[in-house]
Amino acid sequence: MPELPEVETTRRGLVPHLLDREVTGVVLRRSDLRWPVPREIETRLPGQRIDAVRRRAKYLLLDTASGSALMHLGMSGSLRVLPEGTPVRPHDHVDIALDDGRLLRFNDPRRFGSLLWQAPGTLHPLLAGLGPEPLSDGFDGDTLYRASRGRTAPIKSFLMDQAVVVGVGNIYAAEALFAAGISPLRAAGKVSRERFAVLAERVKAILAQAIERGGTTLRDFIHPDGAPGYFAQELSVYGRDGRPCPRCGCPLKSARIGQRATVWCPRCQH
Ligand SMILES: [Zn+2]
Image 1 (cartoon, helix red, strand yellow):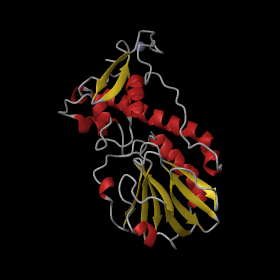
Image 2 (tube, protein in one colour):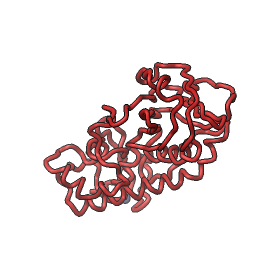
Image 3 (cartoon, protein in one colour):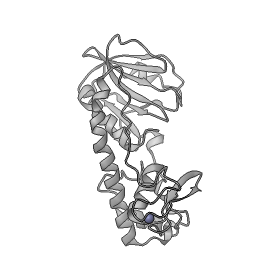
Image 4 (cartoon, protein in one colour):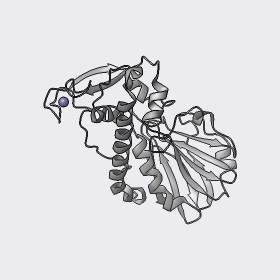
């Protein structure tokens, strides 16, 4: 599943191809993605210039004077920039044609992705109530400390709550807690301000490193046969249940927390 770093890498890969381009047409081969594609995608988007390519949480926004196309890659979605006339493959659901003879093509085998519309000056309901961006200055240890007081939920569930901070998925929550030495089972409300400062710093570092590593796959966005830009991570605990802790060698433990598989070191994390 694309996580925040993959979505940000996708955004950076798309910017040079989409910015200041005019949309000349939209082809919808299926209008039933996770949610129905609204009429505005076909009626308002063509003829508009793309003024910005933004990301909020795991949503990508193509801003125009007439409104914004709001895209989510879901479980299996990918976006590629291709020459006009590139043969359509299975699950190529949407083409957004550009004035330079290329097109932005959305492929999504499982159709959990979405393509929606945000009118100018409004906030789509899916973007309302979201917490701060983890890589922004608006997110730090104090943000987490204040939001966590009185919370009895495990810190891992708290960290993955989109109202607390966006885009910290299962992999990154497990890795950041390991890096900060905090047990994923600990009640969020029992974590000190000092430990939250370390945790916030680790979250930022791990996400930034993943985005940087993703940069090497950018060429795939213009390669017709290129795989989407998901990239292998160097992981310390995620998916390593029962294997030795990379820090102390003690076998890693696992449990389900909030229905999500979680792995941690019982010696290094407390
Ligand atoms: Zn350990």
